[in-house]
Length: 107
Image (cartoon, rainbow, N blue to C red; front, side, top):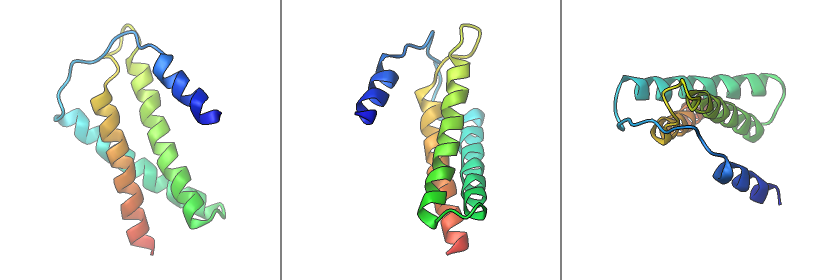
């Protein structure tokens, strides 16, 4: 039921406008790198708080992705640059890369 409600919320929430951007560019690298760093930092923080390896990984990745989604939501304001699924894809790619690099460095 929770998954259904979450999907309904995501699919039915409208953005005021969408960005007209490409797949590459300086801002895409910034999305990727910042998401990777946030994911690794979230992993480390959660582990230092006594969480298991799996739980700390989930915390780090979700922290990073939720920050990226919040930024895109902020961009979707009428005065913003618009929601960009391409930026969000780079956020997800960065979060998973940050998780992988953090895991390789610690285990």
